[in-house]
Length: 129
Image 1 (cartoon, rainbow, N blue to C red):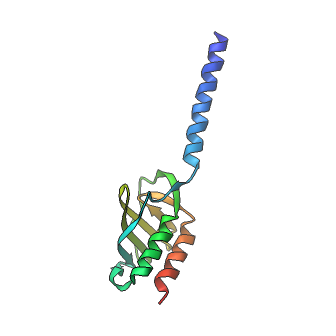
Image 2 (image 1 turned 90 degrees about the vertical axis):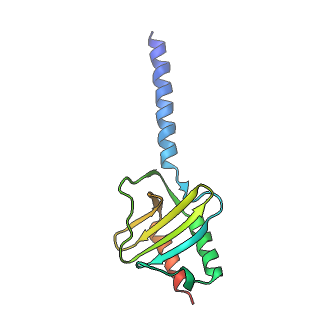
Image 3 (image 1 turned 180 degrees about the vertical axis):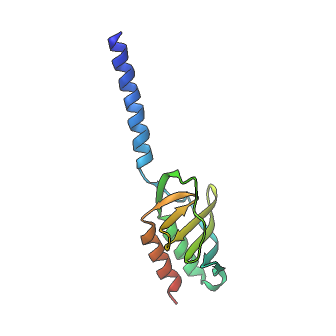
């Protein structure tokens, strides 16, 4: 009887540690190819103002982003001072919200890892003539 409890405890402990490890390992923010449809900065759409090469560079930049595996139930809402990138990956719509003024950085309601750094890189790319 005692041996069965030890085996059961070991199995439960392994399952819990595996689940915790899965949640702590960052996930890719997008899956497969990411295609940008719209870019919004400070509430106005700037997609038409960007060169095709800038859109490709922006897609490549956000394709390398990592995020947490759990989602934020409140989500991120665009506010003044934000950059929103609307696009599609292999799983469907994929929205990046980079809001520096409130420190909120997310992709499809998942918190971005190093979101502040990504925001700076995106701003540099958008401000390059």
